[in-house]
Image (cartoon, rainbow, N blue to C red; front, top):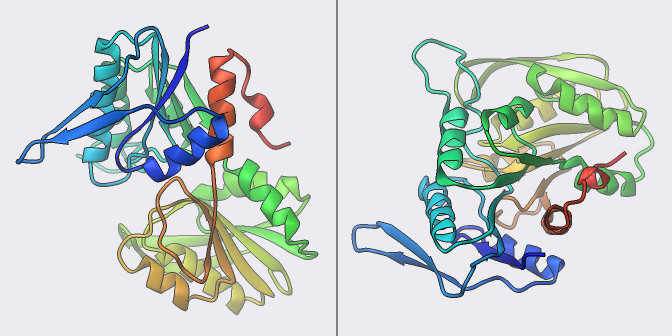
Length: 308
């Protein structure tokens, strides 16, 4: 069987080191050379000939993170790697998954085309913004589930009057899954936007009186939606409000919004680096990805990694 070699892009080394430690292999040696104008030229300092190469890099901004990943794939293929798997805990541009108005790009499809063209063998990611993005790729996609990290933590809280809430209509399917793990009910915060990253109005569908509410989302950008939803839930009689979110983009005034909010805590993963904050708890995806890498290398099903 081919040897496994793990490598990291420059922006996700903090996570790649934890994945490598959980997997039991050290990270391989690679260098990212930059020319004076910013142009990147990654190269491997060790042989990858005949190896199963796994390149770990989330594609949050800047766009250089995505381009670096593609260049690393090309370098590995040209160095005769047997296979190249992209380990992308957070796949950026996934919010651009459809043509919802005239004359817009479908960014997720464009990036999928670029991954296919790079020669990558497969992609591993977690909690895509929309499940159907898996179909944008012409290579196998292993789509891991953040619930396998969040659900055990939520169970450890021993909340007796729990109910789950979706911060918008689009997240109902995800929230319903979480509710099913606890045999709990769910409610929906129906929002209306006038422009991106700005919520104009929100109303609650359901009853949360006296309940410990868990808001469920796949990503938080400015924090506007999640904090407004939390305030609405408390105004409607909730006992407490927490939120779980896989990808903490947290741009703009997000940290300030969260600190000032009525949220008891925001639970996130480390797919994107997070600044220290009193209200934010970070759970690691390292063990989940390490197990998935092992199973893929051994040609085993990853279904056992999904929570039941």
